[in-house]
Image 1 (cartoon, rainbow, N blue to C red):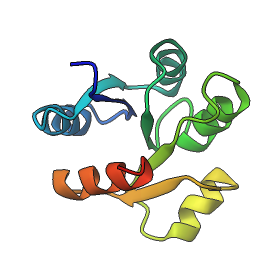
Image 2: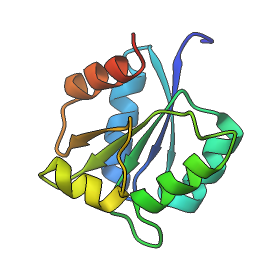
Image 3: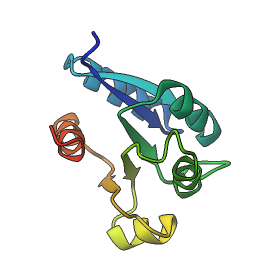
Length: 126
C-alpha cells in the first residue's frame, strides 16, 4: 500500500523490534524495516528513505547517538525525523548521550503500541 508511512527501527533487541514491527504493521498505516545494528540501519536509511526512524540509544558497536550523528551528516538522511527509544529515565540522559537532541524526540521503554503510534503521528504531524 503506497500511502503507508515507512519506518525504520534500529534496535539490537530483536524481540522488541519484532513486537513493534508486528503491532505497527497490523494497523495498516505503517511499513516497518528493522536493523539490529547501527551500521545496517544507516545503510537501510540511505536505501529505503524512511519517513521516520525509531532508534535505540544503547546498542553494541555503535550507540544511537553515533548513528544519529552519521544520519545527520549525510545529505540523503539528515532530514529524516528520529525518535530515540531508551530505557534511560531522564531526558537529560538522552541529551547527554546524543550531545544535542535538537528537534528529535524520545520515548522511554517499555512503551505500548498505542503510545508509540501517537508519538509517531505527532512527530510526523499527522
